[in-house]
Image 1 (spheres, protein in one colour):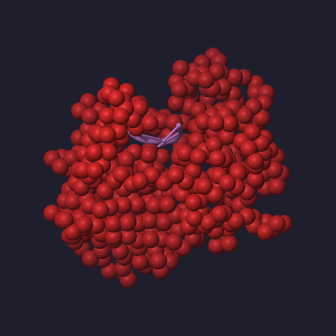
Image 2 (cartoon, chains in turn brown, blue):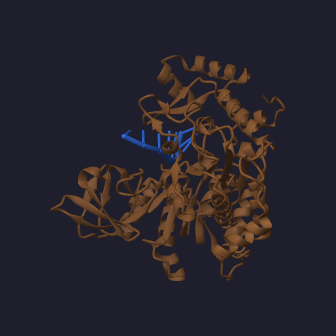
Image 3 (cartoon, chains in turn purple, green):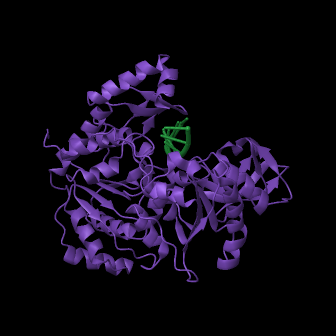
Length: 487
DNA sequence: CATAATGG
């Protein structure tokens, strides 16, 4: 893909490009993948230069003291607990202490470990001390959720940095830095090198930085693995939250998420025992489609009383293939909403009352964000619009504006990042070979709150758990951060 | 050979 895209872009021989790329790699400069418009293109740029700049800025700051005065936690913690009515665990308190004494810090942990309440405590203390805090996240939904959870306004990183498409960059930079004492970034695992470069450029040197996220989730699709490198470098203080509060410790979901992370096959509960984690074995993809539909439409509703239209989410490693999100959307729509009273066909999809749908772009006017799930309420022919219900709120989509709406009976694991569902069904077959990886399966499995069902080939699950096809790391951020070559 | 995000 690299070479074909580069070839199309540069109109040169593929062999030449391969040579150029390997030479760049030899020299310690690498290839940077970036996007222009909707096309992913490859540019030969100094990716490592960007990583070095990030490392230098972070190391300079990490060496300094935070801009807020020392905080007496023996007083501050009881004060917060009195207001929230929540008591923090010892590991959460330690995380609060570490973050409040560090100018640059990382807070990481999986779902249910209390990242949110720990962050809330940190923010309450700092805001009460008059510290100017800014909050940001890489996606619109994550920013919206952060706003709801903290009661403070959070923006997408792009909006915070005031993206300026005309000049192809951000208005916020060294010359026009953000006005804050601390910038908190949530869902940092989704931030890639170019965005982190822009972000660190725009943070004033005196200000602190806190990166929150789950390292075990999928890395950014764009270049780099920024959060993993920040943690792996050993040069930045890391608060790791591991104790799981949300689900009982004996939850098979939690146990198996951990097993997947450590390269072990997920283990179903002993036969006959109640569980929240199941594996339905299949021999080939076509049988998989049949069994998956059976699981979603019959077995889960009957055994767990869950509604397949609302509670069950199918999460696929990819869009393509019979067990891809695209095909399963058609199949599930056919079975779950067989004879709707009305139908509108647009952009290759059918929309009917009862359909589960997803918005795929942030719409700040209608307050609907990329990844938000809704249900088609009705089709208004007079108005020429589809009316979609998002969590009790009616949103009107004129027929001509349905291009950002897609059926959501099935979606990709990538798109599910940052969402949770009562039940999750994940097809895993060797057809998904290119995508099979630990963090992909981990991310999918940890989206399920009450029930997870893998419909797959044992061989494919094995490939994923063993790490799939490992790509050589092209990035050097970790090395830049670890090295003593500080400015 | 596949995954995804941003905004006016």
